Image (cartoon, chains in turn green, purple, red, orange):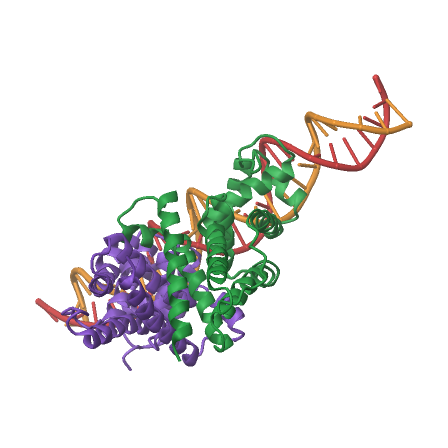
Length: 218
Length: 218
DNA sequence: CAGCGATTCAATCGGTTGTTTCAATCATTT
DNA sequence: AAATGATTGAAACAACCGATTGAATCGCTG
């Protein structure tokens, strides 16, 4: 069991608190999550948060950092030695698809759901942890994506490359940020692994097609 | 003055409350917005909410409905008599671009910002108003988009069409839902009209290219 | 076993929330 | 002007929040 359940009675109080806080913060956000619910889920007293972390905010920051570290360690991006599509079209295309699929797996993959939801909460609420998250965790991964896209968009403005990269992320994140909307229009009731896999495939092929057309355009 | 400021001292208490509630709810969401802040901005007593609307949630629903009605009245979608791209390629392409651009203008256009932010808050928090919003306001517009896309994807599965429509919306909504992330990677500090116009153009042309490639694919 | 720091516990502290009360005030009609 | 219903106002309500207290308990060392 690499990802102990929040209800796991093992481990010390500090770990149980972070496990419980991860799911509660992911479900309800920093503000609406209550220390009483977290402690109840962790099987700890309400005073334990103040004792072990100092405050609710510090527990949030510790939980967020640990979750992001676990998540990005579990979903490493293929290291890039960008292949020129003019020289090795098939290889470059495979590399592009691998990077996009890797990011897609990180966002919509079978990883513990609360990892992504916790990160999304931070980005949505734009709380005090956002600058840290952007520079320390998201920045490097976005840089890899941007680098691969740039190879497939020779001569294009840097802003154009960034917009393509943002489009890739946006299409994937939408299913996590607005599951109710996506499920309603898909006619489904649950974001099954099949639906998520289909979404990732859709983004992978759409991205490839857009880049091929954009490269041929003036 | 088609959009009276929330601080506008004119109008009856009910209207002033909805004006104030619109900005406060858009800024902080249903849960974190307090009736005291809304009433202070409206220049009304806290009891006025209960008297005129019954509860905070009913005020929220009334404010949301009014904002959505205003917003979608101000941004009507081109009524569709779908043109077959096999018969009239140029016309069908223009129609597709008009619909996507219309949706883009509705999301990233120069409309009162709190309209979009209020709607986004509702979708993000997935509160009790979500079903109403989906069926009454978003559903019809999404149906128009889906209809136009379906014409450009003959023989494709309905789910494929829906995923393309979701991709269009996702790319546009991202700039509103995660402005901090988008601005950080764009190297900007504010979502200027130029940046928003460039984003809409990007989605319009990307959508056209994706559909052209998808139609040619098996 | 005695001692002691680390940890946990129930109880409580201010403070804020949405809601409610009821008297005062306003607007309209008789 | 008097009366009546609609509206507003200050104050308080119960419920909940994060934080804190101080005593009780645990785990280890001497």
